[in-house]
Length: 255
Image 1 (cartoon, rainbow, N blue to C red):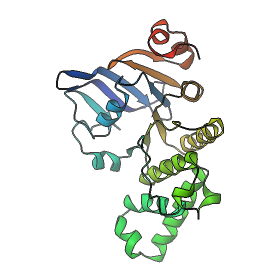
Image 2 (image 1 turned 30 degrees about the vertical axis):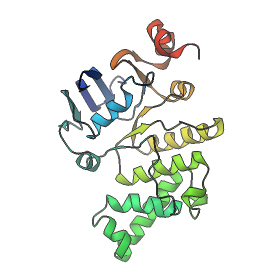
Image 3 (image 1 turned 90 degrees about the vertical axis):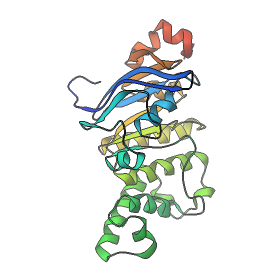
Image 4 (image 1 turned 135 degrees about the horizontal axis):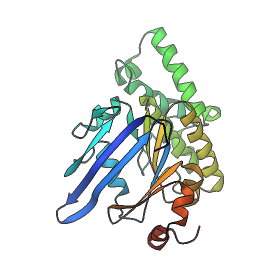
């Protein structure tokens, strides 16, 4: 964690077994507000399991998760999301037949008073104006404001990924967990995604991401944790991770 930064998320000795298979063993993580933390490792290292445990989609066998000073270890996913800890998924969760604006409107309405009923059945003029302002701001954050009327399924792959991130921002996250945000993107799309994520960070959302695009992770993250066979084998700044013999032997090779 960046020195002097207040702790936003603390994970202590987190472990998860599936029968006799140890998916995660004794993982501890400290994440400060305003930090960009990366989690990397080979396939099967325990990265997605970590995200599933933190966000309540799996229950741990051991360990403790504290967010904003509150123990969330046994809370349900929707309870955790309403506290401001939100995640994206490897498979993009968007409404393919709706426009960019409509997708982000739904994401915004879900976490507002009245929920999705407001989107379907209408609300007051003031509420509509507030949502409209919020939707416009979120479209700008992910760089899709100029395409607001396009149907999601007609977007290039990279823009669909950005739209998924935009929908997740409707929950007002103070911490956003990104599961492979750069996966499948070309260099131009990756650069656009990095720019959008930096705007999101500047807007007050801390970022914790998993990805296999090591070049992007190295350039974007303040700090990186490396998993292998469910155990943390390294943690540090990108330059430290790049030089770690154990990390190179198990995962990185030459970058």
